[in-house]
Amino acid sequence: RKAAALDALGSLLMGFFGALLAWRTFEGAMVLKEVGETSPILNFPVWIAQAFMVPGFIALSAIGFFMCMNLLEQALGENQ
Image (cartoon, rainbow, N blue to C red; front, side, top):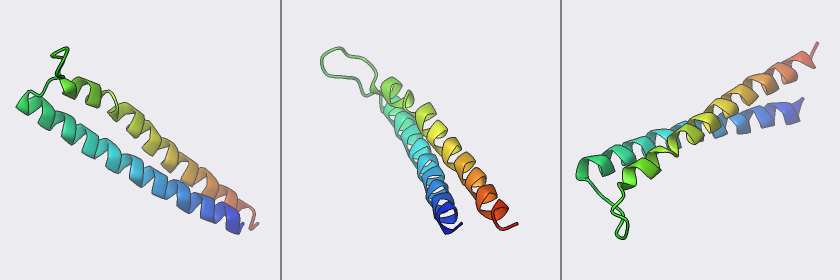
């Protein structure tokens, strides 16, 4: 029961960390778009590559919160 509760805490922290990464990566991509930064050799906009990372961080956050809820249910269910 204690292990499930600690795993739930770890998953909650993973969810918050994923949300923080998604937010900061999105904000960084928008700043790069605003200033028009491009790669030195190909002259490709850098913000596009950075924006493609955002969905992965959103998924990380969602999975963390989902696992937290499942582990909390498991920890509380073993009590009965």
